[in-house]
Length: 141
Image (cartoon, rainbow, N blue to C red; front, side):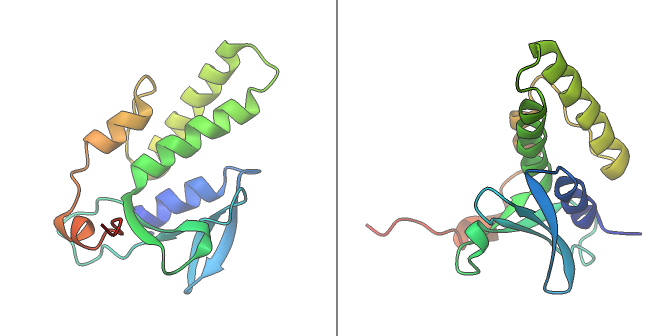
């Protein structure tokens, strides 16, 4: 069985035409076609329980790497994909599409995102890890 992080990345990669699959570092990844940002699954096999963290190479640059809760990335990707599919349609079509995608995400990953607060709910349920804060790229004063 694939790890949670890989299942999240696989779900996002399937949100075409915004994303596509890309093989990198021996893993199936998601490539955002807007700017080349690459989403890589993280190995959480050592953890007591998987949290679904995803490595993000901003614009594909290995020097600009972040580790982000995958559910936060998925929330954003789902919202954007529903909006893309809803262009020129009634707002209720976009809402229905978002709800269908959220349900599909739950089936694929076991994570439930709430449709009314999809972007904030994912973030609120995942505390920022101390090591992620320590290694974050901070502006130089």
